[in-house]
Amino acid sequence: MTYTAWIILTASLVGLSCGLIGVFLILRKMAMMADAISHTVLLGIVVAFIITQELTGVHMLIGAIIAGLLTALFVQWLNSLDVQQEAAIGIVFTTLFAIGVILIEAFVGNAHLDVQHALMGEITFIPWNRITLPIVGSIPKATAILTLVFFVVLLFIIAFYKEWKITTFDPGLAASVGIPVLFMHYLFMSLVSITTVASFDAVGAIMVVAMLITPAASAYLWTDRLHMMLVISGLFGVASAVIGYFIAAWIDTSISGSMAFATGLIFLASYLLSPKHGLLAKYLKPEKIETFE
Image (cartoon, rainbow, N blue to C red):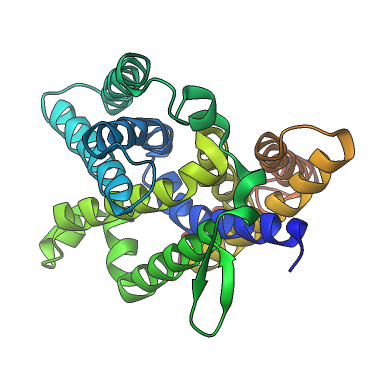
């Protein structure tokens, strides 16, 4: 495959995984949690580097996942103390991210780990960092990892589809029929953390947040059926990656930034043209309210 194809494929995998996870973030009214985790994983990455003095390896993934889970735990704890969820997310997000930035400045030194890299990623370098796998041969490491993450996310969504649906729309009913609501919550936060961590180094925090929230928000405007919303959100994530790459090539600018911008363009088009909740539809026919199926 060509250099361009690897970049687009890798970014599309980010769009697919984040698009699927983002649907449940939007429906659970936890969109800001995506922003929080995509930034607080920096703390886990920095701590892992300080301990091991290595920028690659499974320890980086473990550190980032732990940071993501700690974010969810601290938010849940503050929420239990009657702190509003939005305020709790803001407190934890800014505090843990700030600690990560301070540790970079104080202890990391000249290593290739900085705030700019964390925010924007290094998607242009993806095709050069390769691993060799059986059958498929030599492929970019980020592509291999993101492919695995996509299938893990897809597997868990399919395997626990009924549980995700019930705990998302009616946690009280879920608890009454014996579904472990708290366990499902932390399992979901684990999936968010894994997806965020896998995408973080390649595309940066800004694109991760954009892919987690905007395609799902756009899909919400097109359908009131959960399974269709999952499909549309994933497709919008892929479309954002493709459109964003060609925008970046056209005006010679940041690829990750352009892909994040493309998610906004798709949301704008959805807001205007959606037959369900679009601006034009509101003027052309009376609004219908349907339930998710």
